[in-house]
Length: 127
Image 1 (cartoon, rainbow, N blue to C red):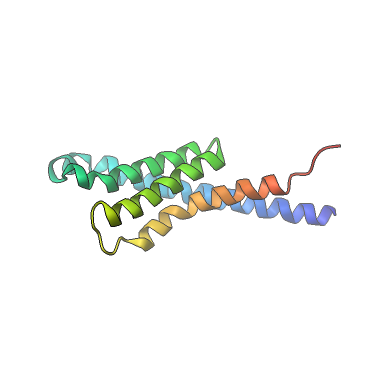
Image 2: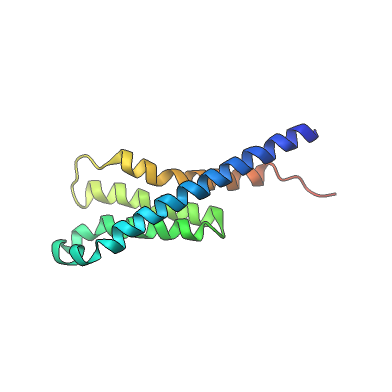
């Protein structure tokens, strides 16, 4: 039983740290993309085209929230990535959104939600 608990703890640690490191890189990249390009975006984009930078910015903020509350932050990040894909397809009419780029951005949110689910599932009541 102790060996099983040790393996479960290792899986949880790996999920947690991979999500944290990958999430930090993605969060930094998304914030540089949205905040760094802001002066150019204001002049060049119509209000309809603000969807992509705004959803990616809020996805990065969700990863920031995930440093304290994994499930909430991962869920926020995934929700805004989904809004980006659906909105880009239907609102902006993009026929082929950059799915690979968005999958790379979504992985930390998926891992954080998986970590939270895994640790809740394997938590044993103290008794």
